[in-house]
Image (spheres, rainbow, N blue to C red):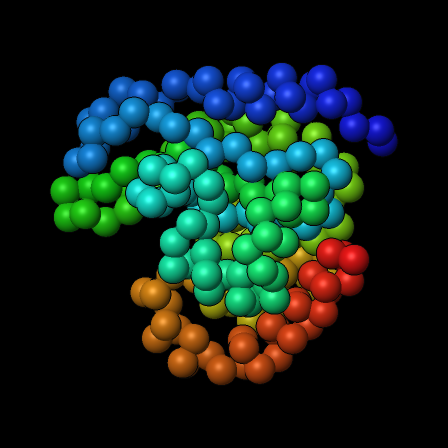
Length: 201
């Protein structure tokens, strides 16, 4: 399949202009306006599918510009320059905008309407993807069609490798999870890094 650059640029512009969640975001504790973070190009061979941009990403306009991003890049074995090379790595979260905080300053889930509206179209424009890195439960449910817990899905990573690697979210909140599941760093990460290195050549 040959990438149609006009189609992909049109799609990216449509996503950047999307305001279907404007009223929803205005009603959150952050009362922010939509700012879709669009980070993909047709040649990408690695897809990082996450949950949704956080507040820092909403402000920067670049995916994973936070401590979670530092940990994720370490997991992948990528430098910042490599990770942000859109010709090799596409970052497509389940919602392109920061969903906001609730009254307790907790992250709200990605609005399902974003995935329903855009994801099939985006994936159709990424025909060269050979590795999907599924960060967190929302991405795993969409890409794998599973309802299992993140721990169960990540523990079964060998069932999906080398084309799909499910990961927990790299947030500091999951530091305890990493300590309870040492097999993740000892067994999964070396295989993931080798696969990423192969595709980044």
